[in-house]
Image 1: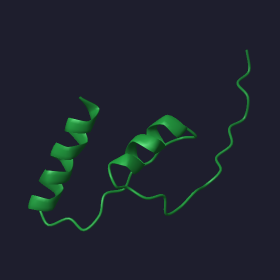
Image 2 (image 1 turned 120 degrees about the vertical axis):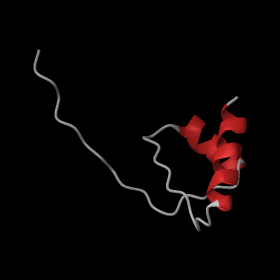
Image 3 (image 1 turned 60 degrees about the vertical axis):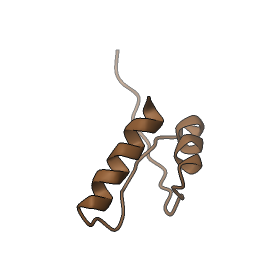
Image 4 (image 1 turned 90 degrees about the horizontal axis):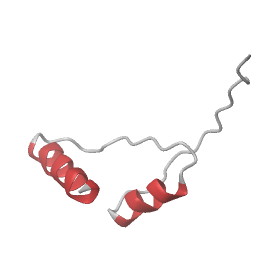
Length: 55
Protein backbone atom coordinates (compact mmCIF):
# COMPACT_ATOMS: atom_id res chain seq x y z
CA UNK A 1 0.00 0.00 0.00
CA UNK A 2 2.77 2.45 0.94
CA UNK A 3 4.61 1.87 -2.34
CA UNK A 4 1.45 2.51 -4.34
CA UNK A 5 0.74 5.70 -2.37
CA UNK A 6 4.23 7.08 -3.05
CA UNK A 7 4.06 6.15 -6.73
CA UNK A 8 0.70 7.91 -7.11
CA UNK A 9 2.12 10.98 -5.35
CA UNK A 10 5.10 10.94 -7.72
CA UNK A 11 2.79 10.72 -10.74
CA UNK A 12 0.75 13.68 -9.50
CA UNK A 13 3.93 15.68 -8.84
CA UNK A 14 5.21 14.92 -12.33
CA UNK A 15 1.87 15.91 -13.90
CA UNK A 16 2.07 19.22 -12.06
CA UNK A 17 5.61 19.87 -13.29
CA UNK A 18 7.39 19.56 -9.96
CA UNK A 19 11.16 19.08 -10.14
CA UNK A 20 11.69 17.47 -6.74
CA UNK A 21 9.97 16.09 -3.67
CA UNK A 22 11.26 16.73 -0.15
CA UNK A 23 11.04 13.86 2.33
CA UNK A 24 11.98 13.78 5.98
CA UNK A 25 12.75 10.64 8.03
CA UNK A 26 13.89 10.71 11.64
CA UNK A 27 16.59 8.04 12.22
CA UNK A 28 14.43 5.31 10.75
CA UNK A 29 16.58 3.04 8.61
CA UNK A 30 13.52 1.07 7.48
CA UNK A 31 11.77 4.06 5.95
CA UNK A 32 15.04 5.40 4.53
CA UNK A 33 15.59 2.03 2.81
CA UNK A 34 12.00 2.11 1.55
CA UNK A 35 12.51 5.52 -0.06
CA UNK A 36 15.90 4.48 -1.48
CA UNK A 37 14.25 1.48 -3.20
CA UNK A 38 11.84 3.92 -4.84
CA UNK A 39 14.77 5.91 -6.24
CA UNK A 40 15.12 8.66 -3.65
CA UNK A 41 18.59 9.71 -2.47
CA UNK A 42 19.78 11.18 0.80
CA UNK A 43 21.14 14.64 0.01
CA UNK A 44 21.22 16.13 3.50
CA UNK A 45 21.45 14.84 7.05
CA UNK A 46 20.91 16.80 10.23
CA UNK A 47 21.16 15.74 13.85
CA UNK A 48 18.20 16.86 15.94
CA UNK A 49 18.25 16.74 19.72
CA UNK A 50 15.44 17.11 22.22
CA UNK A 51 15.54 17.90 25.91
CA UNK A 52 14.18 15.14 28.14
CA UNK A 53 10.62 15.63 29.31
CA UNK A 54 9.97 16.38 32.92
CA UNK A 55 7.72 13.86 34.61
